[in-house]
Image (tube, rainbow, N blue to C red):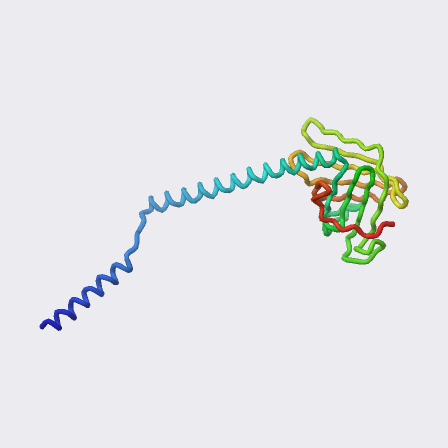
Length: 201
């Protein structure tokens, strides 16, 4: 009798344990809607915070870019080139750049992976900058211009830096031909640049 009682007790205990293990919370439609709303609000707040942080970083980058222009010590690392007739190419920003150090300018175009006169897929042109000017319009956009003269380069160079970003466009217009080219990329203080300069002409 005692043995049978123990067996029945064990079965009841196992059943109770199984039921306890499968217990779960069931939410009403109102509760589910409330949780969904909280999740959406949280996601919206997170997105707004990320947007604000990005805006602040862009503003910092812009200020640093303007200071670099004024110090004549900067590099524009280009990730895109646009040629005279509108043809464009996405390029490596370490080998496509425009730089200025005081009055020494470098324009390097390297749309290919290797070779070319400079050994890195294109040409590297150096020259002396003069008639350097910078202005800011009423909207806060900054414009920087200079003439560059060298052994293989004579050009008028224009930088357009929209307010609130360091992503700029640089148009190089050769003096003696119409082979205009525009660089698009980030304008950085020279010390932050990651460019590789090839052999110059």
